[in-house]
Image (cartoon, rainbow, N blue to C red; front, side, top):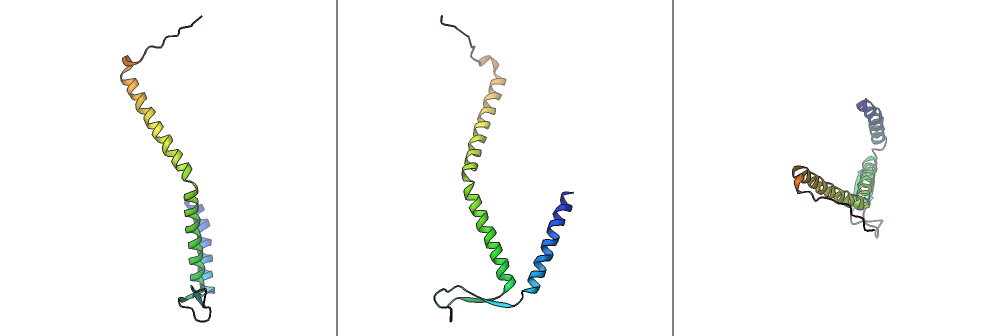
Length: 111
């Protein structure tokens, strides 16, 4: 069922991407020189669909990096909780394997 819904979403997206690429095959000049628009030092002649796809991929990459950096506090807390849980599990195992070593708790009231 999960595969069906994935295909239901991805097949139309792939079809749209192919149609976009076919409709925008014309070359455009991508200039990386902001100071000389007439005769740029660094420019490329690329199909428009390639420029669009590269822009989307760059946006996804930048968004992923920003999200990953923004979640660093949560990852740090998770590591701390895992260490604490591991330590407590070890302590419980040691306590269960050596019950005679437990301190006897007495309740003394000071009246």
